[in-house]
Image (cartoon, rainbow, N blue to C red; front, side, top):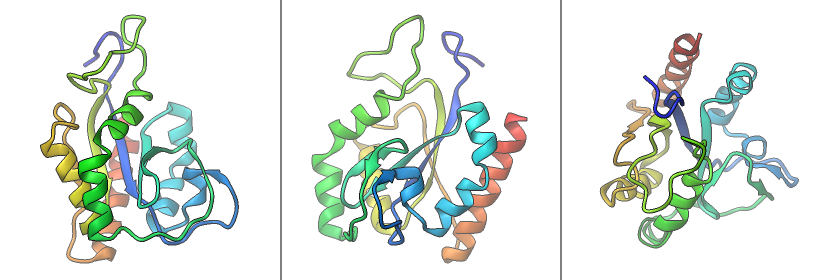
Length: 175
């Protein structure tokens, strides 16, 4: 299926990690948690196809693209911070996603967005507190046409295995 000649793709949303490199750089390389290391195993294929697009839900910055320059920081996603992002950062999150919408019919869609038609879904690796932000945004209409799917499991190990399995499936689907 294509929309305006653009094939819908998967996008990833990863929660930030406590482990970060001690320098400034692109978000995708600054975070060094296990999920980011698993995702980087697919880097060559991902770069070759330009997909999936990666977004990070950061305790400090909110929702950012993988290309965002960040510096090392130490901030935890508390319940209070999650509420602040969920109820106060929706428009900025929407703009972050919008900036990465490829042109369709020679132009980008304008807000308010009916859908992010170039994404068929958002696969998320996020703990409970981060999920509160994402599911609140979902209930407020942010992901209305491209559903959220979360890595699941009884513990972090099972979630990481599910995340890796989903990326492997994506790699097979994209051929």
